[in-house]
Image 1: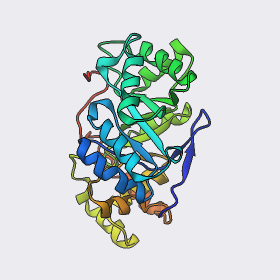
Image 2: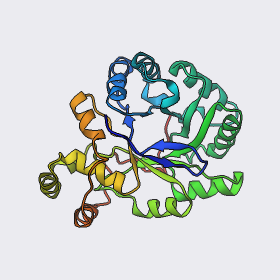
Image 3: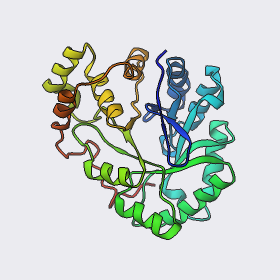
Image 4: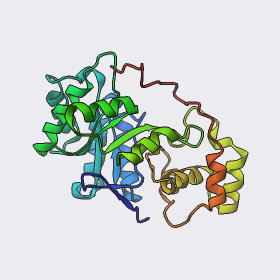
Length: 278
């Protein structure tokens, strides 16, 4: 079982440097696949209300036999639950479905700027953290303008921002902003879902030289760049391969070659400046 290194968040809590993404698993798939991942060394499990699999994730965790204290469990509040009156109800529903008394990281899934309630939502999340219902609070898909507003109106920025990120969509300006403000960058779709990333000849060449798979090379690029990737896989062998990225390194030349793969084209096509999540 690989020894997964950890980052220390700005609030002092530790987070594994690689985790398991669970979108788009349903409850049944999550119940079956989460234990497989945990038995292979994963300790960070990422879900969300809108994934519709929190119950399955919770059942999978319990059936794995891995103590809850060894895990880093993340979920996200959906757009329809933004606002002062809805956050506590939404969080309590998440905790009930997962079968846990706390989250290690709770995030706002999308800023939903048209609704304009993410600041109120953030304040309620700060209260939930202070009460011990969540240990760390973060966001997903936020732009610098959203992050700066949180700081200006509440005095606090998130410890994590989870965004679409992979070698073809590297979010370099956003990552520089994160670094300046001590925000950890977490990557959803780290293997470039809905792109041709894994078919790249450059990637295949690096994988051959390293004796690894193209997916392993991409995940090692994330880890070596200080980004936390959360790849999803339904295949136990690929799960094992995806987490086997901590005992080898890409060369400086290989890292530069991967940096040059950036196209600036999102695989999802979602723009946080206008996207509204239900």
